[in-house]
Amino acid sequence: MARKLMIAGNWKMNKTANEGKALVEELKNAVADICPCKVDIIVCPPFTTLTSVLEAAKGSNIKVGAQNIHWAESGAFTGEISGAMLKELGVEYVIIGHSERRQYFGETDETVNKRLKAALANDLKPIVCIGEMLEERESGKTNDVLATQLAGGLADISAADMEKIVIAYEPVWAIGTGKTATPEVAEETHKYIRSFLTDKYGKEVADKIVIQYGGSMNDGNAEALVSQADIDGGLIGGASLVAAKFTALINNALKGSAC
Ligand code: PGA
Image (cartoon, rainbow, N blue to C red):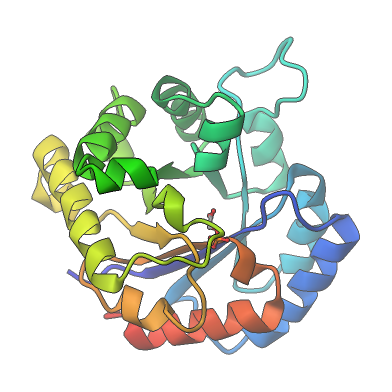
């Protein structure tokens, strides 16, 4: 089944409001001729850069996402941002459970699940990140780790809600390291993720879910990765911070996309 390509830039803690605006101004001209029917192009800046990026992206084919969301509607959660705050700004997507959140900020499958429910309740499209550490892959535990993350992260999520969720498979050992999983290794894991979703939600739902690859994806490897049957796009860190590189990546991914 042909799923629409989805390429999302995760800017992490990069770009001030002015820098983000400048990047989107450049990017929107560079991708202006790409039909939105073929690919969803998303940028996920830091919270403080959302407003200027949303303004710059208006009327273009660039969509905007946040990098995190708190599960409560409001309250005493210093430093956190609620779904209503993001929705009111005009944000459409939200990254949940990135491995850096899991590694450095105590994110667990339980908090991923709570944030996911908050995103759905606020009509934001969640990009849920999962992925194994190097030692887990080397000891043959990859699928078990992913199954645990998926079971916990997606607890109590209905099939109707599952259809609104994007999964980003990001092997932790490939993030920011320049080490990409080979297309074949990534595909094998994506296939496993889709089989997990098939068991839980049935084939019809699982076939609709966009599963992105993330981890040192760039303009050189995007086509080969996206050519794989179960790889439907990418979540891009470093290569999303320069308009020309991100545009080249999108164009090369389009060559590999079945859609
Ligand atoms: P990278 O990051 O492309 O810089 O490896 C990907 C990510 O962490 O989402």
